[in-house]
Image (tube, rainbow, N blue to C red; front, side):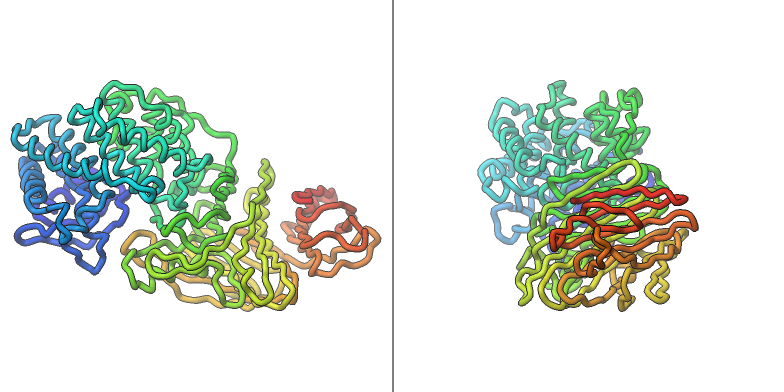
Length: 633
């Protein structure tokens, strides 16, 4: 939820009553069910059987709400609530006592450093704390920072945990004037190395989960703002990585400005965090992806100079609507950056960490600004939750399973039993059409090993053709999964699916498929489930086969087209297949796909009276004029 003055004050009023909800849009684990402590706060309490609640309680971001509420109203109840609660925490919690283990993880310590100090800084705009109170806070933070300095290993070097703890140390050192000590020098050096190995060259965090990528970015921004606040030059590596991650966010942003729910991610608006990137770096490209003016939330997160200069930054519109992030295997196909635009996200990259899902060859699809095909989300981290496993599994993603078996397998909330190896992707983007493909080796363990390759043609502005290619020596059953956004009507009619929202989307197939429409659940926010639908299509092929899926806002006529060799002999569908997609009486496309090298020394194909050499592409016929587009050879 975007924080406004009203929601900020409502939340702060609850906190004054020892009632806690975690309703900030960037809370890693949102929980909007209130929990009230009638007497003393139990800092190690775990309601709902979810230890993540205890972690959230002990990160103390909500104390910044009290400081903001005090600044806005000058009401001392917010100040008193903060003083009482932080005293309670310091007096009660022993981070070395096992019974407080859920209060003492290094990730929480790092976030506490940031949140405590941010809270103090906001209060101190108008209020001066007593010396003894500040000393008490310093002593507690120093004890925690000593742990953060000493407890650093390979896990924390690669994990977002390590970034958070190092940024916490740097914030502590800035506030208490310790920049000439190891509290500053050591974490800054560690952070630089973390950025080198955690942030891929295309700006995606290696864990392949935007929610946690942006937690890392939030910490880098916090550190950059501290440098600016103290009139120091931001280290170049911090600026470079803010730019890289900020542009990755801009690349993935849907027409409604939200991130895709890739891995363990929620359906979250990206504009505020991109705005902060633009403000800190004074970057016009990033400003195009953010807000035109500083938003309410970012006003509290930025230094005075960044806020004052934001209106002076010239917005620079990119000239590339479609973007390929090849290092992470994420591709974003668009016709524009408009809110009513068309968008497809295709992924064929590493699964990342335990936050990763079985989503190889998945795609999200937005048509006319409305989300139709989406990722199913995460819901919970509670161990033993079947819903958690269901949402991580392959069928919860818009991909294909073979013989009813998943290509990646999971155990519990975090375990990965098997992760399919992705095959290199290929892409080609231009003004008229985009193309992307990828495959994986998740079915090499079958008795008849199989390779699935997915090829997506996007003819701008609103025609998508998906070619699922299966290479094997036996017979298999193939199931396509299409997970549908909420509030979407699904109609099935003879090899034809119609999806209705304010607009419509039609799905048709090159071959007769068995269509099942199932009730399912999706999670757009941690701790929240919504009813939805999943479409499953089933088809069998003997040996090699290709299935075309045609998607468009229009009800288009499609039919198979016979592929011939250059000598006009017929080509079996197992080698090459083509479909005709009729746009109007005078305009149509023929999409073709070849699954293997041409046999018998015949190197050419013949379709629509055109002789050509190539494996994948399409022919456009417009008023009798034919244009051949060979994409792969």
